[in-house]
Image 1: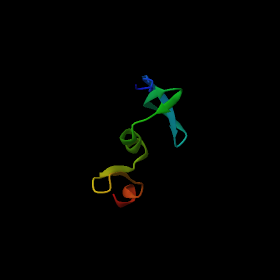
Image 2: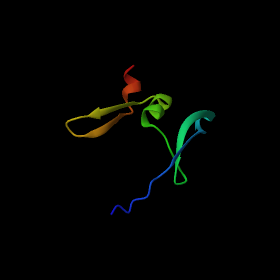
Image 3: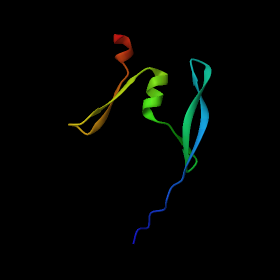
Image 4: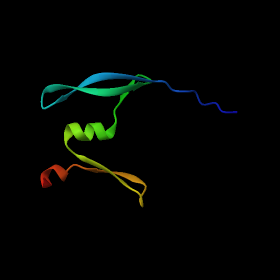
Length: 68
């Protein structure tokens, strides 16, 4: 018997402050916590996100903006 409860994600918007300015961002509220899509945050904060298939992990490159 499966004892796991279904979780409900409520889609909405919130604001993050970037360089002191409020910026609207899509958010998902789950059990009272805000969750964001990593690729959307990467676009806002100018870093790269990738996937390493061999290592089965996410790569976050915060130095990529310096190389542009």
